[in-house]
Image: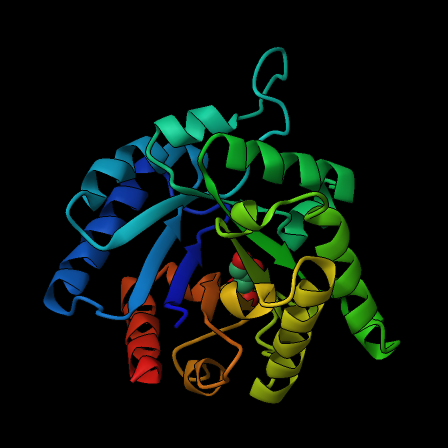
Amino acid sequence: MRKKIIAGNWKMNNTVSEAVKLVSSLTKKIEKNPPSSTGVIICPPATALASVAPLLKGTPIEMGAQNIFWEEGGAYTGEVSAKMVKNAGAKYTLVAHSERRTYFKESPTVINKKIKLALANKLKVIHCIGETLEEREQKLTKDIVLNQVEWDLKDLTPQDLKNVIIAYEPVWAIGTGKVATPEQAQEVHGFIREILDAIFEPGTGKKMTLLYGGSMKPDNAAGLLAQPDIDGGLIGGACLKADDFMKLIKASEAASK
Ligand code: 13P
């Protein structure tokens, strides 16, 4: 059975001291209510990784980076490598978040390179996909996610895929308060499992963890997490408050029963 996961993407929020404060508050809450069937991941900004890592020792919370560069290292001013975030304590990295596709024009080739480099550095990958509002209105959702899965994950082996989580994040639902209905999200998640079987080998779809992201909040999480093909959430806004993030972890625990 696939384990549920609640992951928090902090985006460009929190200084080091703010990060330490938020994590300290979260670890206290988690100690009181340790989840039994939910994995918890937080993705602070790169500047806070090394300060957050020691606070997570002995807790069930794992840490991810939000981005890595696509080359191992060298003359790439301003970039952060897979090895650097790994050494700072990250076990995961997000790749291909829609904000990176939009603002930094990340192409399937770049995304594929990043995913392979992360895996080569023993970082697990949370690979984000999803359609824009315009694409949904043109009934292109399935074409878009099919293309993203096919090209972003090109040439990955079954062994590689064990270390990849896919997060379906419809762009129109990110930061807008417009959450996908449980039925809309379930339909796409079910479709992703089908295409994973078709692109890779039969049985791949049911093995992989698929998260939903986009305005997931304590008051709408239960319906989404109850869907058979939704294994958890990738949370933006609601992960910046320890109370709300804890409520989402509790919702996931309740949905796992
Ligand atoms: P919101 O939860 O703020 O909509 O963000 C979702 C997201 O982009 C997580 O990666």
